[in-house]
Length: 414
Image (cartoon, rainbow, N blue to C red; front, side, top):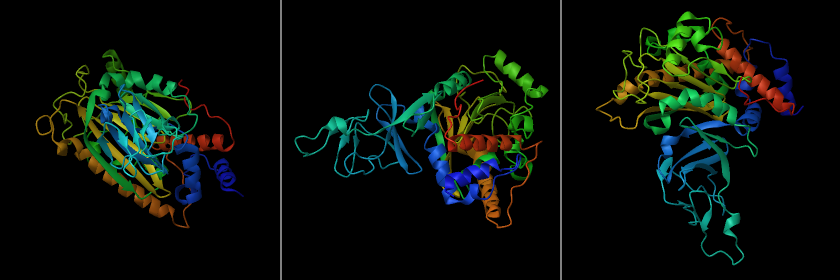
């Protein structure tokens, strides 16, 4: 039996409301199917507009086997390219980020314009046609200050996601913010374990003392059901919407992405030990309402996010192997905020730096136990793990559709 047939068989025989079979968290062949059918075919959050704020700014990233470079061209358009020279394949941009008037391959100095066109290739034969050897483009979209890429030849329609996300995020002006701090950790566990851990707060009280000072553990805040029936949450939505901030829970029919604004606890305004703002300057001058909580965005498979009045925290998930996952966290603040004057990195980053490290240990212990020959899929708590169940259902349905050759309704918005 070939691997795709075997994966489909396992998915179809999965017990509802239970975790996945061991192979989905450990097997290199299943991991390759994940990469081929999800990571190499779907829209992935990759970075922020403000990271390429000026012409020639660029950053690089590795998605599975694909090195990618993202830059801003002379017309102000954000573009993404395969970071592989059209001469002999060397990486053109070798640094994590930088700025350049042209993209020059360090191997033989083939030189590309910021829009990908090949401008110069030294001492090539007379019939060489530069127009046929530009950098290969990667589909790229910018929305609400977020940059998404898609490696597929024909990407899914991005418009419905844009339609849902923009009203929530545009008031916060993240395209005009700046990255105050960036952290990357590697978790020794499958990317799905990273997401499953993120999608519940069943574990929070025992593991996240810093986060629990401000973030609610209630399943109605962390999951996908019950929020509208929670009077505190529905009241919060009403207050925020009256202030012009879209807040109510919305989720795509496929379950791949959703957004909502959730209240923090004890009158907290930010993810700090005191609950007070970490940054003196508001993230967006027009958003002056106090106690707006956190704007949540989830987009499988690559990002979850929190946007507050004073700063935003964005998370990017990228698989490095069957049992290795990279999580990059960025803290965004007002572009005019000055470190040491308007904020300190310690206060800004402490809660999520600690929480990320705690989650890393949780995921690694989870992965360690799953490797046991005695492991078998266990039941989720319907009260506390509805978000995990929703993620696993999304993954299962998504993979079944693609393994059966059907086109999923990926980007329709209710």
